[in-house]
Image (tube, rainbow, N blue to C red; front, side):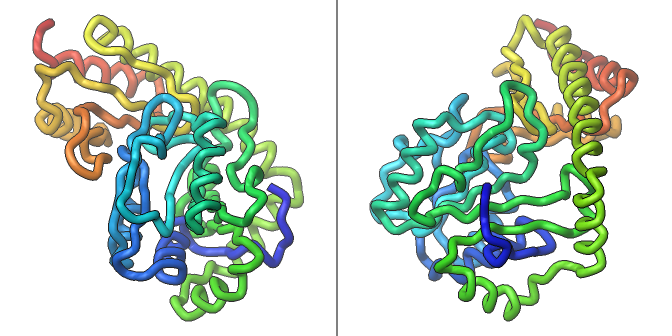
Length: 301
C-alpha cells in the first residue's frame, strides 16, 4: 500500500480498530457481512456495536459475496483476503473485484484485516485489497501481534482520506491509543532493517513447521480426510470424519496439553466439524505427540 502518513491510525489491537469502525461508521441495527467460518473477535466487536451479522460462506477462493443476497445492503464488510482466518485460503482476484464493485454500488465500507500476510506458504507477495481500491471504500488493518509479540499492543488502520478526521476524533473519544514508547521502539526496529531480517528468519521457520505438522497429520488421517497445507497463516484446519465427535476429541487433546480448537466454533451457526491447530511453536517432539494422541483418540477405520 502507498498511503500518506496522516491516513494511518495507530491502535493497540486490530480488534480495537474494528470496535472503532463499528462505533463510528455504522448505527445499531446496520448489517455487517462477515466470513463464515471466520474470526470470532470481529464478530464480537460488531455485535458489541449492535450490528446485525450476515454470513459470507468461505471456500478455497476465500469469502464468496455472490452466495449472499441480503434484504438490505451491508454498511460494513469484514474480510481477511490475504490469509483467510482460520482456513488459510487466499481470496481470488475476481472475488476481490466483486467486493469492491459491491461496496461502490451500495456505499459500503470494506474492512480488510491483513493480520499476518507476512506468512505466505504458496506463491509470492500478495497485493492488498486496499491497493486495488480507487474509490476509498477500503480500510486496511495490520498488526505486529503475529510477527513480534501480542503484548507489544501495536496495530494500525489505513483510512480513506475522507474519514480520517472523523475516525481520529472517535479514536480519542474511545481512548483507543497505543503506547508511545512501544511505537518508538518499533520505529527504531523498522528503520534499522532488523525487522525485515527478523521476518525472513521466522517465515522460513514457520514454513518448515507448517510442512512438518501437515506431513504428520497426513500420516495419521490421510485415508480418512483430505488435509491441505494452508496458503498462509499459522494454523491448519483439519476436517474430521463423520464418525468422530468434535467436542470429545478437542477435550481429549486439550487434556494432553495441546491448544487446539473445534473448527465448528468458527461458524456463525453450525459448521463442519474439525480441528484448528496452530503450529507457531511446533517441534518434532510435539508434532509426534499430537499425532500419536490424535491417532489413539480416533475410532478404528
